[in-house]
Image (cartoon, rainbow, N blue to C red; front, side, top):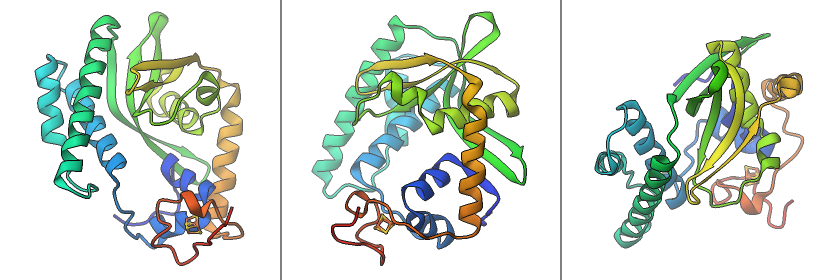
Length: 241
Ligand code: SF4
């Protein structure tokens, strides 16, 4: 895929905010970020849910069949580890299924892509799920595997959800009533009423980060110890922030 410096999306902006060298590594140098067991599991589960919703539902066996088809083998050290993670993902989906039966929602979109112009930028994204709400509103939901907890504060302060809410409004002309995370390992939903008052701040951050990425401003480093490319990055600093 051709590198487009004027395209902004959450992952790209997140990478730059985490570390400019991480952004350069992935998006400018187009170098490979190796999959991990957790990233592969998360992708497999996301794909299974997307296919399930796209197929207009079905029963649990349909969901598990989508999971089997979507299973990614990369990122596991051994066949046994792959099997353990596969079973873990199947349990997550079984629990999600039970939760979905008891909390039926009208799913309007899943894996919904959007794109809107903003000044010289094109802002793009893909949203896990959009549900109908009463009164012509929609609820934006991002699936998380939930290896870390999520709170209402996380939702309210989420750059990702804020970009997606603006995308729904500007690109798809939908009125966002609520935003939230569905924590698959709960399973539980953390949702908040959407307040568009923060949109200007989000767009300002996109503009500022976009300009720094264009200028390839490398004046700081992220937390090397937690970085996904720490074993491959020439800028790695032992004991860095
Ligand atoms: S290892 Fe450190 S310098 Fe390199 S990309 Fe990661 S955080 Fe940045």
